Image 1: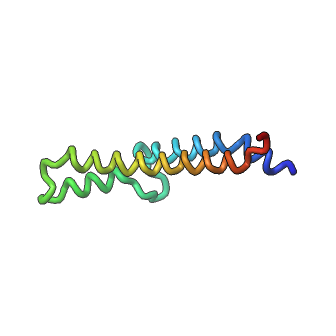
Image 2: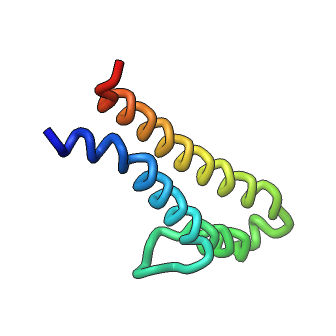
Length: 86
């Protein structure tokens, strides 16, 4: 059973890379990915939201934090399930 051992070792690195990829999409939009800062700029261009920069960017920041936190918690749960050394 080599695969469970390999997954246990590689999951933290893979999840870390995926979280970095999610965070870096704000810098480079690759292939039409869902890009939150572009959406926030479009929202701020709407006359109804002029001057509400803090609220929009705070909301986008919370979305990023929740998504990255959920990824890290999922990774921890998966690591616990694959932990063969009790």
